Amino acid sequence: MIRRFARPYAKAIMEEVQSPQKASDLRADLAKFESMRAGSVELQDVYANPAIEPAAKVANTKQLAQRHGLSDLAVKELDVLIHNHRINDLGAIAEALAEMVRQATGTVAAEVRSAHALSEQERAQLQRTLQQKVGKNVELMVTTDPTLLGGFVAKIGSEIFDASVLGKINKFRESLA
Image (cartoon, rainbow, N blue to C red; front, side, top):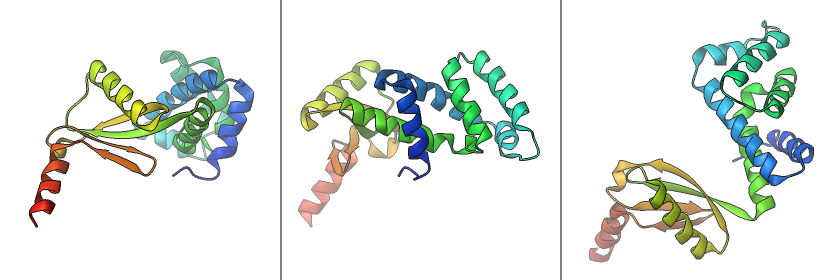
């Protein structure tokens, strides 16, 4: 669920870049930075600490962005978030931006749990299959779940496609009961 405060930031970004493709590229950069921030206790402490001046946080952000190849536009957006004390909410803002990009491009998100890591060929085949089922472009968000034993479970909106071995076992159990 996207938090309410995140939408105005995402909307402002969409208006600034004026293109779903540019917004998608920017979202990827913001998500990359968020992954770095969330994965480091030290970075979390730096950005959460109100005693550290915003200018120091911005300088740190610029160094990280340069080291990891983030765009100048991403640095500009991160600067705004730092000064508005929203940098720790970057994940929610990036997700709101992703949803706006999907709406603008007629794409739906598919949350997929797979029993094993999917190859590029398997991802492409799964994406084509789901696109045929729903009649829209599909953006895959794949996680690995070994408890499925085999196959996958895909959730698009409120619709669930269960092609897992565990799902088939459960259906067989229900039919016997």
